[in-house]
Structures are given as C-alpha cells and as structure tokens.
Image (cartoon, rainbow, N blue to C red):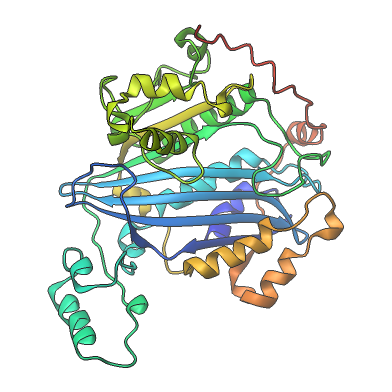
Length: 405
C-alpha cells in the first residue's frame, strides 16, 4: 500500500490529487541523545510529503524518523519537524487534520524490518558494519576492501539491521505558529488556515490523541504536554482527557541532566538550547527542571505566543505494520532527496501563477515520484458548509497564558 492509497478514504470524493512522498536512504547516524550506550545503533530517516491538487501544492509535511536499536528493544522516535499549507487554491471539503494524521499513521505502520534491510553505514568500514550485519556479509565487504577492486565504492555497500521487539514508539514535536514553514511567502494568502498559538496547540493535541488511540499503543503509554514558562494550572486546560499529563516524555526525574535525556533534533529549539549549554560549558550541570525554566526565557518563547511541546511514548504492536509495505517507497540518497525537496520549498507561493514544481519535478525525476489518487470520502451537507467558511482571523499575541514570575 502506497501513501496515496492509504489517504484515499480521507480525501473528498471524486476529487483528484497527486501525492509526492520521498524518503531519504536510511543511514546509521550519531545517536540523538548523548551518553547512550555504544551498543545501541541509531538510524536516521527523513520523509517529505506534499499533497497536490491541480498541480498546486496544498499540504506539506517534513518528518524525521529515528530508529534506535538497543540490546533488548527498539526505540522509534518520530519527530514532526514542519507542517504547512499554501492557501493558494480552494479544495472544498478537504480536512487538513485528517490528511496530517494519516500521513503520520502511514509512517508509523511501515514495516521496520523492510525499512532497515538496506542501511548506509555511518562510516563505510568493516568495523562499522561488524556489529549490525551478518558475518558472511561483513567478510564479503572486507574482501572488497582488501582486494583493491577498482569498482569498489564504499557508498554502495549497505548493512541489514534487524529491529528488536518490543518497539517503543515516541512522537514528539513543538508547536509554534508561523506565517509559513515549508512554502515561502504563503503567509498572506487569503485561503491559508493560520491558527493562534493556543488553537495550534489544541489542534495538534487532538491529532496526536486520535492517532495513538487508532494505532492502539499499549503498555504504559505516556501522553505529555508542556508550555515552557507557563504555570501548571494554565497548561491543564489544554489536556483533552485523563490520559494526558503536564510534563515531557524524555525524563521522569527533575534532577536528571538534560544533556543525557533531551534528544538533539533538526531545527528544534530544545536542541539549539542544548548546543548553547555546551558552548557555555554548562551542559553537564543543567538538570531537566533548570533546562525547561531557562528554555522559556529564549526568544522563541518570549514573544507572547503560546509554544507547546507535545510527546507520546508507548509500545507499538506488530499488527500496526500489517497494511503498509516498503516496496513502493521512493527512496533517495541525501543529495538527491534535498534537490527534489528544493523544487518545492524554493518557490514563491505568493501567487499560483508562479508555481511550477509539479512539472519541474516530473521532468527531472520522472513520473514515478508522484502517485495519483481520487478521493472516496463522502461529505455531508453540514460538513460542506463548514469547509466553505472563510479561515478565521486570529491574533497570535493574546494567548492568555499565565507565565511564571
């Protein structure tokens, strides 16, 4: 099942869409958390998804997936980096939240065994693959190196990594309203849905809550949300049900050192602050409690805008992977991945006449990077009326959040 097939039942009936979904080649990377055992192996994967209508991008998502193989379990960390809409054209009855939720669901349901069957080693040497590959493959790799073959290219050698049960899935993200994240100059488009910090946080909490419920996480699943700098009583009003708590999924002890618990993720304010602590020489003396307190004083959190941090952690059952396969994925090496992504993110989205990425991508990368789908979701008259309303005008600066003194 491809992403387009998965999304079909969540797209408006009889409306044609084109789906772009590319994935970076899985690669062994530096662990996202400092101080993790050397026996663990971290694999980094990036996803870029765009939903097109009439050759115009409508919704875009950028997601990072980290698969960390430990001795007795597999940790699957899903970081939602960016989500954006263009607001260039009207697509009646299209529910952005449904599309976003089911894009995340699709990624979480991908078979990890298939995904990790072809992984680029971080350093292409015999030692780098010895612990994650079979003895036969390792010896064959070593023979290529010592044989001095002219055709030998370390970048073409892959390793196969087996995930270990149970699979502990973590979903994390921070919510901050911006005029645009993926589509430059789209912020002023009249059809673009822009939410306040308060509304955006509630929107994402609802999506994540539904996603985890539908995927049937089991075990001791943790649902956490925090707003750096806000009082606990102010955060409690955002919790949709009794499953959710104020806090984060990275540590349960306020005395833990933040550098050993908080993951270093791309374009993430938490990671930027950790790097700042390292430069100042305070990384090994700043605990979790102090980390969140000081983070709230940084620019991203001081402009009167509600900025939330959402996290969920729980065991992902094997049945979750049954409906999705890895065979139809479009997988590119990093350079090619970034080149294609730039075709989308490098355009000017202030006018629909300026958009050429659909044809340009097809001309350079071929037709196979796109897949067509016609929606099948029935829309009631009541829902149609709601979807035709103009997007609400919001004021991002009046969040009414009580801050710590």
